[in-house]
Image (cartoon, rainbow, N blue to C red; front, side, top):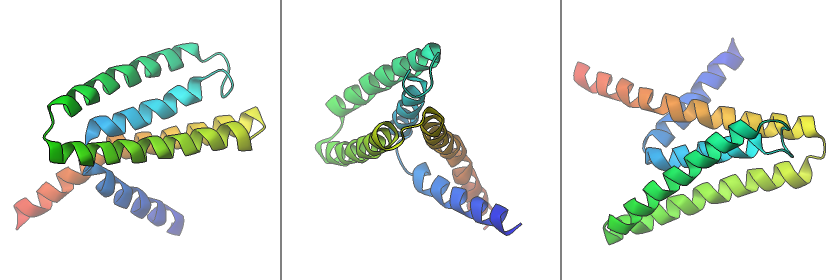
Length: 139
């Protein structure tokens, strides 16, 4: 039971942290991990998975570029910093999975685990805002 409480705490804290991030940046983050997972050298015969998530990355990137064009100057710096952090984390995970993990099963597990964790965080983070709103409405 202690492990379940620890996992609940970790995902709760991470959900609260990521709920304040801009959602479309986190969507790009998740789609990049799913795209990486579907590539032939990570998990063979997963071309449709890569195609769908690669298309999603392109669409979300266009959305971010449009946002950056019309965003105020102060916001552009924050967004660019956030985009840099997201790409740095993704690049680190991708490079570790490609160069450090030699067995295909280990690469699949590592990339799949990263995609699963960030998927849970992305889809659960709005729920943490609902809890905060609920707590404020009780006061």
